[in-house]
Image (cartoon, rainbow over all chains, first blue to last red; front, side, top):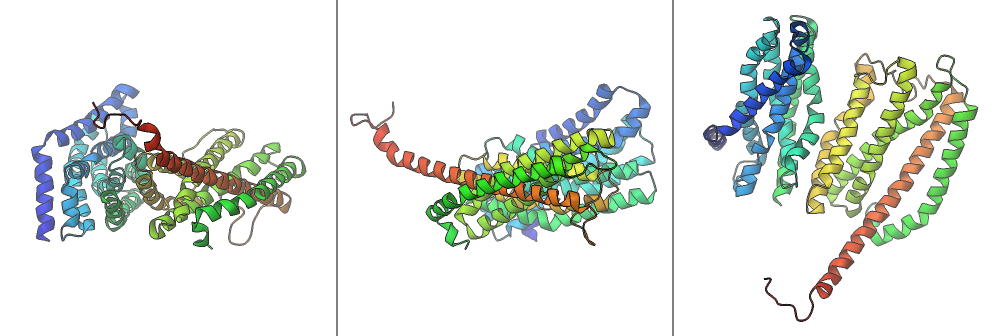
Length: 221
Length: 252
């Protein structure tokens, strides 16, 4: 357990001290959201209706953009081999790395989302649903993304490739996340969507690290 | 059976003998199927002649799912038992499956225009089949993304296994969600609800598709094996050809 906490500390410290990367992903997230009012026109009514979808799409893209941070650097300098040789099970290493990835990309997105919702003229009542949906759904983004990041280790164009692999897998998260806000605040529809989002994350929590660890093992062969 | 086929030479011999028969059968069944579908089957009382798109669309959809299942099973066999032909079969089948998926999407779109009044709707069935198409593309891209083809094959095999979660979603999307796409009418509890005058041509077309797929799969697998053999021969003869006797040993 203390090894896992130590690894988590290391991951977060690395992300913090190389702050440029977190900042880049978040800057990308905010900019992508800001592009939409400029693209579809600044009409408040339209923006309010598509606001949740915009924020979710931007969150997805920000998660994809930061995927290569998960394993590529450690694979490059050999740190991943040491982690694989350590007493920690590789699945545990993957969960810790996903947790660090979520803290540095998912959590800031959740925190920022109410402000962006304000920019997009969304109702104040919708903001908690949006933020709660992001809170429940973004762990699944990090976990599923880890599979793609591990599979493309050492590939010729890992960035483009992992987005091609992972975006189809992200679709359910996007559908239920945007659907929760769409269904209406306080309705049973919103509740059902949020429950499904939570279910996706909970199902990904044990399954995705298994697949990721298997992919890492054959990448390290 | 499987382990006997693991010998590529034996596979080449067997598939070489089976291939002409399979090709002839595929051509014959497809011809009969097209004749029945286009001339014998009655027009629908609501849809008129445009119902004939079904005979191209539905078997393509079945094959799209079936081929993905085959890719996934072959991938599992390749990963677990390192069966040499399984990886080749999976990689040979994937582009065929992508083609069937594309045929399914395009004919569905052409059928949707007169019947639903739109080329495309974002309902669960259509979206999940589109996801299947992207899974195929991702599989093909990943398999070819590495300098070491063995590593690419193993990575793609794992992706294929992850993508299996999409298959039940596609199959049951029309039952779980309220979709514009109709619910299944052939493989359902209580028997097919489609009249035998249309069901028989449909099943014959499905057999034709299956035979066509088997033929193309064998051809592609034989090509892949031949390519591998050619590369091995090239590598074996390369040092002799590329090093002239008086070349300097140190590159300048």
